[in-house]
Length: 164
Image 1: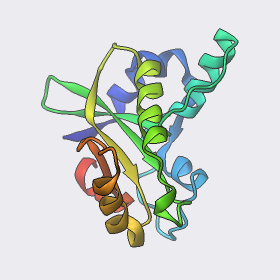
Image 2: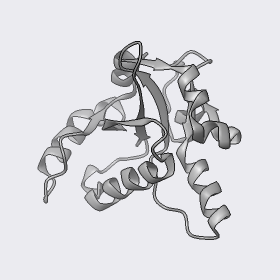
Image 3: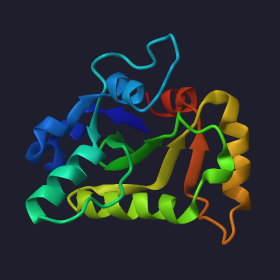
């Protein structure tokens, strides 16, 4: 599975909301990444789901739904493309504050906002600082009631190595 800039840009929600298309490095810095290195090449573009949700709420004159921070297209093979939803959580210090309902609501809100124009990947990725990654995985596995196995905790370098 590999990141696809073209499929990300051509997604119906990206086309409808061009102001919500953003550089991934800028987004992770906005979300609290404090690493000194540039993680992604500057042409890595993602769809800012918080921006999409804000525009949807304004258009519907309603409240913002909870949403994942971003999504991008990944090529499963030469023919199939899926959208991977990602939520950077760099500001977390105490993983006991991870709330199962909030995690579920984020995925639900983003799934609704993306619609059904492209398949959404089954994995829901939550990015933590490297020093908290093991604790986050442990917390996910110990949540009661249990959170689904497709809620994945990793660090930004794992994400980079898997999809870029």
